[in-house]
Image 1 (cartoon, rainbow, N blue to C red):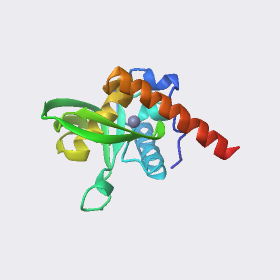
Image 2 (spheres, rainbow, N blue to C red; image 1 turned 45 degrees about the vertical axis):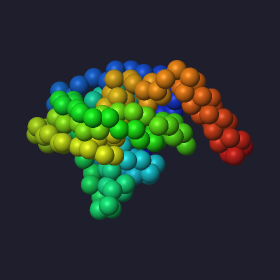
Image 3 (cartoon, helix red, strand yellow; image 1 turned 180 degrees about the horizontal axis):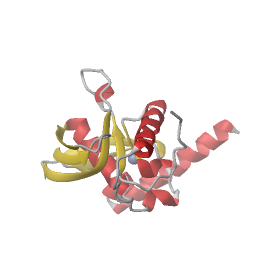
Length: 175
Ligand code: ZN
């Protein structure tokens, strides 16, 4: 396995609509394993392939650290799509492509997602809470949509200004 380089906003690959995976082969499984390692190393609960510069519809997720079980629960999702959604929830979200930025985003409270697993087998999950939020956030990445696109214009300007400030701070810290 290998750590992949996480693309930081405004890297243009984050705006590209990702291509479906047609065959789940060893190359795809290697990408999944590398993405999982990269997600854990970055302390993330989800990672979409465009965030590591791969424009394919692949997501890894492990929200277990944020629930009561605290048991690892890694899920590999290939070609995920939302087939049902209901309710509203607002959650303070982060994103590995926006280090240190947290913003409140309103999304569906419950989602049903169909996808293929690492063996190419069809799967379906019904998710709520942080898992539902994470799925929607990561699946947005596959369409080139970022969490700052999910808030109003005024809050988006503030969030992007805050992110600029955080980036400058981080650069100064390294220098
Ligand atoms: Zn993200």
